[in-house]
Image 1 (cartoon, rainbow, N blue to C red):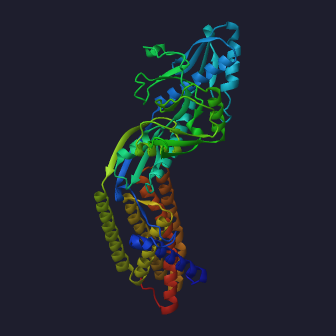
Image 2 (image 1 turned 45 degrees about the horizontal axis):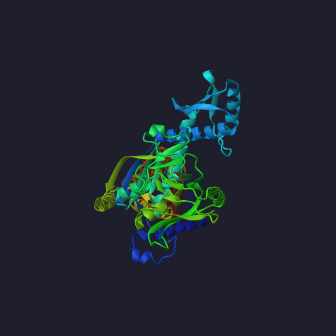
Image 3 (image 1 turned 60 degrees about the vertical axis):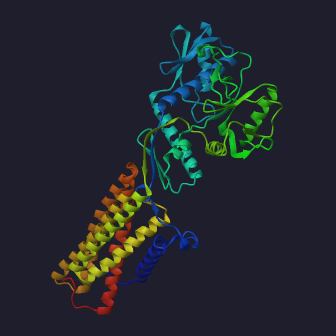
Length: 531
C-alpha cells in the first residue's frame, strides 16, 4: 500500500494543481481576475454574515390562499350550473366550503354529477381539481377540499413562491441569493450585498396577479357594497375620476400567466411611462376573441384586485400585444414589468422578520474568521510537527493541500461561505489531523512489534484506514442531515464540513502516503522517525 504507484502520484499532483488554480482567484484583486476566463476566475461567495446584506423571513398567507381558492370554486360552480340550466340560489362560502341551494329537488343529483364531471377531475387534468362534491339535505350541494389537500396546496404554493421570488431577485442583479423553505409555510431570503431590505420587500411582497375583466356598465355602482350583484365585484381604481371604484365582472377573460414578456417603455404619443406586454398564442387568440365580441365596451386591467386602467375597446385586437397605461413613473413601470415577467405569486406573502447586516460588520466577521482559521491551523501544525517530526511535516503539507481543495471546490461550485462555515473548516482540519494521528500511532505500534520500517508504515495505513472510514462516514451522515433539515448558519456549517471530510480523507491518506513513500525511496531508513 505504501508503494509509489504512478496513478497515486498523478492524482496527488492533479489535486494540488486543482486546489491552487481555483483557490488563487480569491487571493488576487478583481482587476486581475476580471481578465481570467471562466471557470478559472470564480471566487468564493461570502454569506450574509460575512459580506453584509438583507435577511427576510416570509410566510405564505394560508387564509388568503384558501379564500382565493374558494372564490375560484364559487365562480366555477356558478358558471357550470348556469351552463347546465340548473336553477340555484344562495351560492357562497360557509364553514370553509362552497354551498349552493338547488331550486328544483329533482335536479340535485344532476347538479352533483355535473359539478363532479366538470370540477372534480384529478388535479393533473386541465381544469380539474381534487374536490369533494356532495349533495346534502335541504337540496344543498357542498364543494370543498380536505385538510390533506389544503396542506398539499400550501406546500405547492410555497414551492411556487420560491421560484417566483428567485426570478424576481435574480432580475435585480443580486448575486447568489439564498432562498430556501423553512418549516411548512415559511421562506428564508438572504441577499448578500443588498443593504436595502425595503427595496426587496417592494419587489417580493407584491402578488402581481394581473387579470383582464369586462366592466359592468349595465348596473350602477350601489351605495352599499353588500348590494353588489353576485356575478360582479367592486374594485378600487387608480383613476382619480373613479373614486368610488369600478364594477367589474368576476369572470377572468385573460390572465397574466398567458404573458410572454413585459417591459417598461414610453408612450409614443404622450411620452408617459407605460408597460408594454405580449401574450402567448392562447392568450392572443382569447384576447382577440374577447375584444372582437365587446367592441364599444370597457374592459379593466386589474392588478392585485385594483383597476389600473379601464379603456374602451375600439376594435378587435389580434396582435397579441398591448400597453398598460396609468400613473407610472419610470421606476414603477420598470418594477411592474419585472413583476409581470417573473410571474404572479400563488398567494400573499407576509413579512415575519427582517434583518440587515452592515458591510462593516461583515468585514469584521471576515477578519475574525481569517484570524481564527490561522490560529487554529498554526496550533494544529505545532502539535503535529512537535509530536511526529518529519512525518508531522508531511501531515502539515497535506493539510495545506486540504485547505486549498476545500476553497477551490467551494469557489468552483459557487458555494456560499458563512461564519459557521469557517468553524466547520477549522473542525475539518482537526478531523484531518486525527486521521494522521491514527495512522502514525498504528505505525508506531507495528514498529514496536518488531516489523521493519516499510512494513510498519504499510500496516499503519492499512489498519488505520478502517477506523478512519468509519469515523468519517458517520460525520458525512451527520453533515448531510444538518444540510437537508437545517437552514441558514446550520447549512453553511454542514456544507463546509461535508466538503472538508471528503478532502480530508483524500489528503490524510493518499497525500501523506505518497510523501512517506517518496521519503522511503530517497532515505532508505533503518527506523521510523516516530518510533
